[in-house]
Length: 578
Image (cartoon, rainbow, N blue to C red; front, side, top):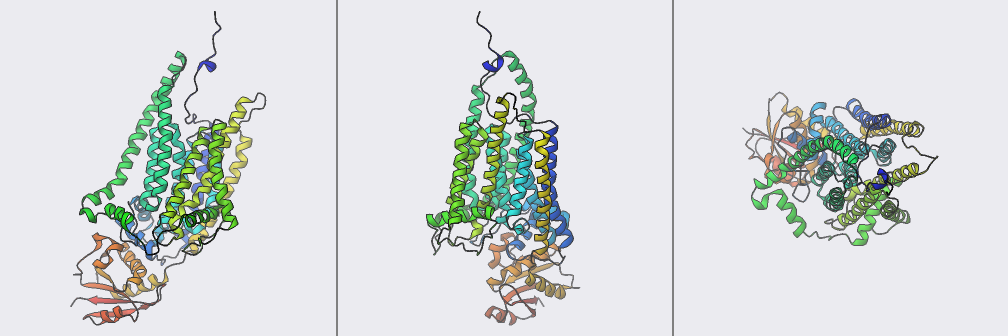
């Protein structure tokens, strides 16, 4: 009779998936990692609420963000951030994330800043929890440390100032972490990635290449994993029974997550689709957005491939070198040696993850490398397709790739050492031992404190829009005691729109119903355009300009005064219907 084969020898290789979670080490590791990230951003929130003057005001894009968040708080916002080209970014998901905490913190600009820090903290926490689901305590702690290091290496104001390009930094990291997990072949992993990708695409359309290429790459890993699951079966009846019991409970949990995440994915795209369907075909935002990228030609043309490559290198260099992005218009005339080195290392690291992952039998490492290769290709594509001047904020999300690479490398090394420990008789390496985890946890906690202090300093150091403060004081004095709850706003000189946006944002926060003239529809949206039949109108014009003089010539118009702004002296005029 032939000798029986052992179960271990007979059983075919299982598909790669998340190892079982649990155990004391995993529980306390994720607790320390999560609390460290929460504490860092929590310190930032507390510093905003306790250290920023109540008179703080935003202007420009941040003020428009405040208006959009107010609209989201009443479920009235359908589109994403405003673009200077006359369309809006695809969707309002970022605004809806900001709305609840802003309302909770008071509804003014200080509350908006605190809400921005909190949302960044939630994105960072989601990164840690996504890695934790792999059930590897050391990897969870190390990821939290990488996130905190990233926060420290970047300019701290990018996690405090409420500006859509800044929101993409941790959003991009979360997207890549989730994309690298899709190789497990579970529907919740796929839907979570699509949700995070929706956040990026809705907040800034410039991330469309990133979302598209990474989703295609992760989708391939998902298809392969699902196919492997169908063709792999347990070798013995014992295995089959054990797998049936385990699968029964996991299938229920997976179904619940699948239904919930699927419903959320549909819900986040309802507002922009509804706006398109309820608008005349050519006036809907999605059609205007597509038409712009297909037909629009900027006089300055587009960046050359060489310029796009230099821009990507400069963005990658921010993380290891802690460089400030510099002037708005990037210097892409030459490629410094240090930038070239960072670019080369980034490309080689992504390729190395693929090669070593396959050689060492680490599916996580392999697919991390594939996702990063796709992200690098998307970075180049995003830069080379920029319309007009290549400003750094258009590709700022690229700065998150080095920290994502570090997380991917940690996955690969963890798999490598774990495999050696299991195969090495007498010299087992237990990566969950307390002697290994405690020193890492201490470093993470220390990093949490330092990151929190950095965020707090950035919060109290963020400059207030002095022009908005002065203009708001003029308006408040003029309206005091009138009981006016409806105001029409006109921007006579287009260049002074930032201070006008700040004043409008403040009025809306105080519960005043504000309408604007049709010339400002691209800034404030069609829903805020009104005929101007209110009893009170505010007009903003450059002091001494032709528009200023013409407005003063209208009956019932009073010049409330002039304030200094970044755009120059700006006059605020009050027109009262007789």
